[in-house]
Length: 617
Image (cartoon, rainbow, N blue to C red; front, side, top):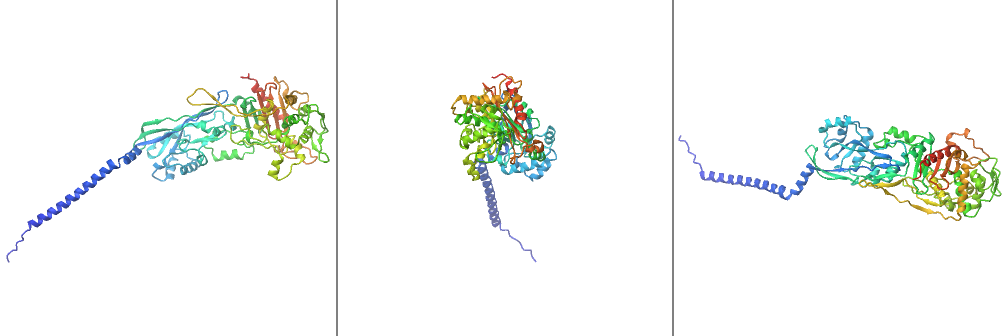
């Protein structure tokens, strides 16, 4: 059978080839068009966007926290300093694995406590993910070296050099200075986050908190170029931070040390003030504590020990301790009686050892059971006769007592420039009716006249009132910062002295009489504080006080030997010196110290001796 020939259709094949070639060419052209379009989009239309992303990968903005201002005492002795330290920071945005795993691995290189983890977790929840969050503070040189070796394993983790607050004198004046601590959740609610970028610490209490704005300064920034690993290659632009202002205090650190040492192991408070300017020369609250413990995070056990200590070392007694003033109130009551014409320097009262309201059987006892006999105002103050002031207070009445004593600041905050001051209490009819819904009774007026009952004062309030008395009613606002110093100016900027009030003086001789009586307390033959007057090279005007911490039953006698120490009377003493030209006024309260003449007065004499041993400026 003959083979069958196949004739190719070259025309069809050529047409098919051309169709496929055109399709392939069109597809290729489409791909090129898409590629060109994408290039146009990336290089032209979206150029700004992607160049920004590129710069974000290459360029970073790093905050530079300002150096915190230093604090000096009145003589230029530094009391709050900054020391070099290292901290470990994590930027959450740069962590691409489980955060807990990263922290666990870091814990193999540096010590990370539970308190560090908890604080880090809290701060991380409140901090933007692109901002670094501190995990550990105050790393040792060995820890820094260990981390540096393995740094490549921890992208987003950095060791940052900085300055750490340090209090070179430890517990000395800690209740006045306060301390800084790590910024916590509560702090974040009261600060401007942008101004605290990179800042890890903030003033918590005392001067550190009150003057936080001046001490903190202004944050700066660095624009840096980094490599793919995040390591800084160079700094492109830098806006330097502005350091905080330095503060100069009114405190005399040497006087402060002497005053604190004078208390020994007793608890209490002492405040010394310059009557002319209101400068606080010493502010003591005992016991005290070491503020350095709080700077980089106090451990739970140490804090619990301070918190639960029955002596309450964290309690600022000078500002927040509210005590009955006891007999230290008597010069003010006596002055009120003179100024209001209710008594005179020649009037006498017989003291049989007790006082009775007309028609009443109850006896209000004098501290001296056998009585003082017939006394005038001078002897009543010098010997601290209760009966004289029972009678005078009743004659004045609570309304006039309240009106006159309030002028000296009793029942009011002094305005001292440390946060947390309490006002004490100057009772009145209106106060009792508003708080207890009860009327005022005459017996309450009697005990108010000797500094007991509802009347409460703080040590700083009592010192301020004593200073006002020494200056014949010129009352200035106490303050503890005397001047500031900007970082770029060697000159100090003094803060103004603020006069609160000038108490109207009806007769200057009335003030002279009270001051003379207070001098007799120390230098008189029968003065209750005559022992501290011996050997003094200057005249002292003072007043002892003993304040009960619990009430005695009718006819019950106080016997310290049978009572627990916590039930002993408080010991008080106020004074100013020299009498004619006062340079210092002081108030001392020793908790459960007993007699004011035996315990508080010698402490005051120690303070006066130390300060007046130096020549006046």
